[in-house]
Image (cartoon, rainbow, N blue to C red; front, side, top):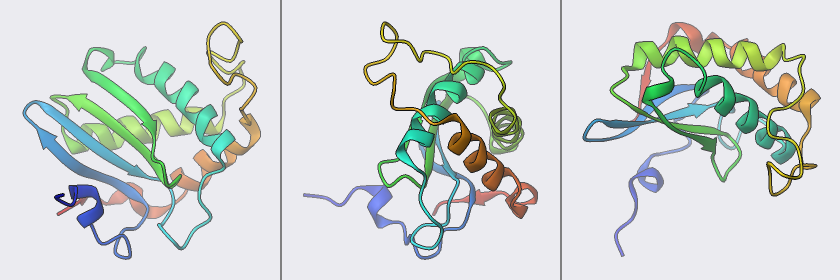
Length: 149
């Protein structure tokens, strides 16, 4: 079998930041790397689940809601994938920063955290989600644009 592209990236070279992971026609997959792989503590799975619920809600109600295809956690728990249609890295950079700032200061109920709305609705941790979002946005990646090669 062929090795998939994401396993061909040298993860020892990745830092926190936002990367273009792949481009498929008009769809772009962005790699939102919240933790430095194999260096920083990975995301707590309950925090990642909470970030997914809040982040997806914000993205799908935000100014680019018609361009957001998918937002979800990486299996390695070092960040998230964001798939969009026709959005450039600079726009994504500002969008991601805004969404994660909102998550870091979230004061409302977690969206979709009811039995009728989620298959694992009790598997959430808002305090850890907020701390993880703050850890991510308070890193100097905000002045850099990264690309996976």
